[in-house]
Amino acid sequence: MAPSVAAALIQPVEARPSIGKIKYLENVPLIDLAPLQMPQNSSKEDAIASIAKQVHNAMKEWGFFVVVNHCLSPDLWSNLKKAMAGFSALPYEEKKKVARDLRNPWGYNDKDHTKNVQDWVEVFDYMSTEELEIPQNMEPDCKETKIMGNLWPEKPDDFKKICQDFSQESVKLMYQLMELISLSLGLPSDRLHRYFEENVAYVRINHYSPCPHPDLALGKGAHRDGSAFTLLTTDEVSGFEVYRRSDGQWLRLRPIPNSYIIVAGDVLQVWSNDIYDSLLHRVVLDSQVERYSAIHVAAPSYHCVVKPLEELVDENNPANYGEYKWGEFFMTRRISNFKKVATDKGQ
Image (cartoon, rainbow, N blue to C red; front, side):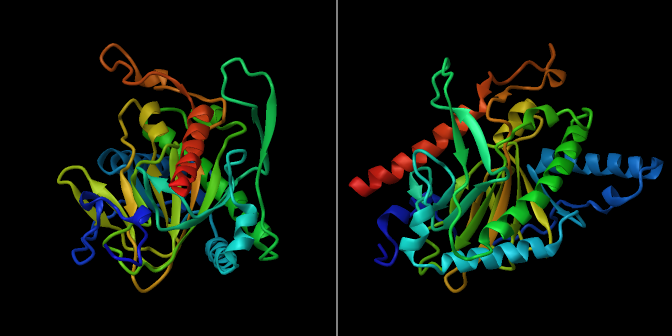
């Protein structure tokens, strides 16, 4: 065991990456969103229909696709990366002032776990909206509510504004993609809108520091996202890998400047009744250079009841899932992660 990697971060042998045998995905499902900026006419409608078909094919085969020529300025991500770099450079005691806890799942965390193994990453999470009213507890008959709000550090001075600028713009892309996904399922473009009123969409900024033994740890262990879908952007350092079901291979994506990777999550798998599968993915580390990325998580409303969409269920295609409440699922996952950290500290 390498002494420079704590035991809590060492992956089981079967989950460790093969650092010397990187395989890249050569035919990335790349979708050009430039037609969305066209004036409204029949040509635009045809272009959108074509994009929706591309979305369908990519989601069916891979569970993700990459978009270019979207509506977001590259400055949004470059500014966010600089802000996170400034925050990451602060003393640990300063960062801990905005650490998330059992009462509030937003803010700083450097003890994320995936499948009971700690990830080699520090993150900062914040909601697209500043505050959200939710039930006081997860009891079915709970009438009392509480306010869940973002935590912001005092430094860097412009950290909060840069984060808000990013989320205010990226949520626009989130809704564009939501409509394309609806169309790709043969549904009206606004079919999913109702599930995102007072949504719990949030942004996570990731900082992966160099790891002395990247063959032992992972920046983020293999997992599927619990949300509807995720928008991921990254710097020029590779590390994001997707799992190819057909042959059990992990394939790395080469970073494409000013692009976003759109990843299908569990909610979309349930809504689509298994037409689309959520993507199994992970983040591999580098021994020499740090890496930054950001995700905008398209999470539905806290009170949203998730179940297969009625239009996609019939006698020949019965519902493959029961229903569940998104907010309860989300908070249970966050709390269990925090309790895992507390357990580790006590050992």
